[in-house]
Length: 132
Image (cartoon, rainbow, N blue to C red):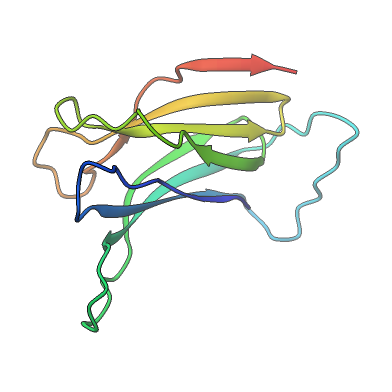
């Protein structure tokens, strides 16, 4: 499993905290490094609410979106540290995923413009794939 906090934009004092989480079927999965392990897996984007130093009750984390894929287990996640947040287009950032199929994928994560409360973020098309 891999986790990565999305950096908050420096242009906003109060901003939603986002966490990318990679998941797989079982905690007993074997993570060999000797070859490609094709396997279904998922990537989830969670909201932890607004960053606040108050003593109020913290917000309950909320699943914003999930992506099922066949890239194998994601071994590492990392958000681009700056310059990828754009409130006008809804882009929340770029997420890099190092996958067990031997690729590193750069994925733009965007906020949906629809009012659908079940899915209020989405994974746009994979921007770049680097094959090892």
